[in-house]
Image (tube, rainbow, N blue to C red; front, side, top):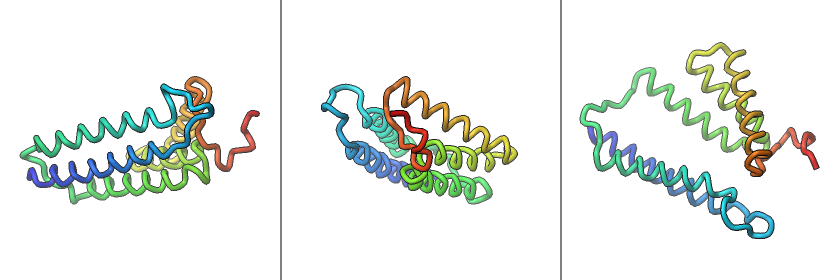
Length: 150
């Protein structure tokens, strides 16, 4: 079933190009500073995704069957959760969006709802703090903008 890997690889290349293009649309940092900016990490991810996609196209797995059972449904749910996550990132903010996305994905993988959403909340807060204070890269606060430190 090398056909499935090649189709998936082509879809992932389209995603990598769209993701990379989206990263170039971020506004320039104040002062036009060179070096690490808000587009650096997403561009690296787009590059890794594109290279991995090319590998799938050039060297597909000969024994790969498409998972139309419960695994296929779970994969579709995960993709939908990630699409909704990107749509909610600006209005809800990084912390709440991450809480919902990571919590839902953990719950779908078998964690209890309380543990799943606690994990999502901790992940959202920790990553937010790392990006805002250690990396000095602002993430949207959305509904939690009242927490913004001036």
